[in-house]
Length: 190
Image 1: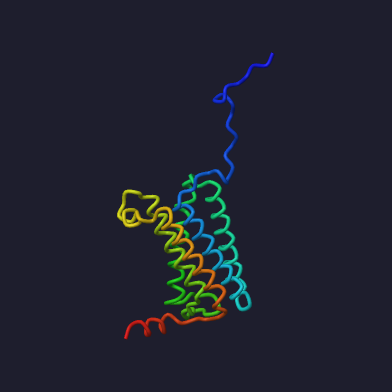
Image 2: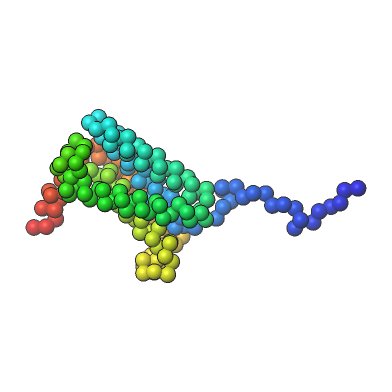
């Protein structure tokens, strides 16, 4: 004889990725990683014709950003992904500044500052926003988190759309538009 089970005794099915609650700030992180990946993929194609090593590195970086975005999208509560990604972004920003203002010992501009391209500048902005947001999420009682308290719900969505659009436009509208860091500084500082 079969016994009827009470509704609370039935096992709940595992939550599908569509049903997992994703805070707006986590979705903003996913959008920032994806938009930086778009800009880095564009840079990969731009540099492939004259320096294959950098093209491979840009490709690996774009791939890692997409994988990271997928990981966080499917597991928004997993905080293990936040700190390493923020450190990588910090390193990329530092490398970008060194390569644009001082120059790297390798590459097509070895020993000279690399011109600033619009796609890589957009990716650097995405990575700086990403790093700031991760810092705020990891230290919720700190000053940065207090300053970003307004970044909830619709505001996070708007910022995400704005930064993703900026990266897409940078990739689409700038085939080879570059400016040197010293030219940019001389333009900004009289």
